[in-house]
Image (tube, rainbow, N blue to C red; front, side, top):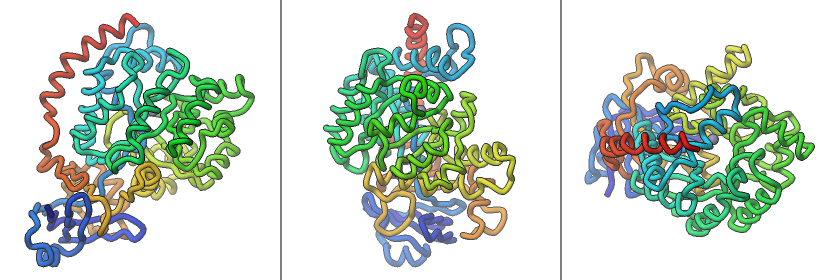
Length: 442
Ligand SMILES: [Zn+2]
């Protein structure tokens, strides 16, 4: 069934970004069939169902390159004990209790609700990093169920760590990687690891062995806080990226999340091995861990993408946060205007291509039909030449009206069609206090 999303402003992105006024995107099944002038598209595809996009701007669906669905039920929870003074205490007092307290239904709901948020924000592809030590086996299947129900795309993995049992989570990753195989374009699998400081050499080697055999990459937090670097230097006499590189974790399918505390030599390893880095500016600011040397990483040729780290599912907000943070951190109002949008609009698509084998991030014939359609009346002229100005200062605050993924309309007129948000949130409000109670005893 073909659909014409017509009478909007289409921003194609891709290498030859075009801004087309009074334009239409025609989707057929899971693919974009054509893009161009609305009248012309109506003439060529008269039988397609028409969706009027007047007063709207059509972009490729956004990508979140690092998320934690499982953090959903922590919202509004009071944390037992003294306030955490540093990052390791945040993990010990909050996240390592939240993940242990999750049961089967919590895991499912914890994925369903942020997936609704993704639809609301036009985020159509997500690379998630999951943990639920009390219910590891089968946990990735629950999340897969939620992703398929939502109609979005996701790469899933379980974060292996030795903190509860040695190699906890390896079996779940191995099972899910085998089951997923090369993926179907909607679900992909990675080998997840928590972070260098929670995995022994033996655990890492096991993970790398499984990942290599299956041809998938590793997804791991790297040097998020100075403590990860200190741990690696004291135990292994080398910084974090060196350690992981020696153990075989680097590679073009692997994702090193954060890389806040990395030196120039580590950046060169990342560039030489074509390992992706994912920057999460809001999370880094929230945890007060430091500032990723983003501009240096990009200069060295490292592919850096953008994630939310579970803070939310709003990629435009992350993009502007990256823009603001690196201007301030560098005390230079000339930087980050190009770089922050590049992370979101180009680099995330490249990272996803390595996982899914799909070329997202561009509205063009033959590309996957993933769209974010936002309410936007440009108050000044808008063209290819000044699109980034509109993106950073206008579109970032525009409301997403319609979300399309794999050719299916998942939200239209701001109404989410694939999920019942009200019912899911009501059930989550019943379950969350029970989870909080279990957590107090941990
Ligand atoms: Zn994370």
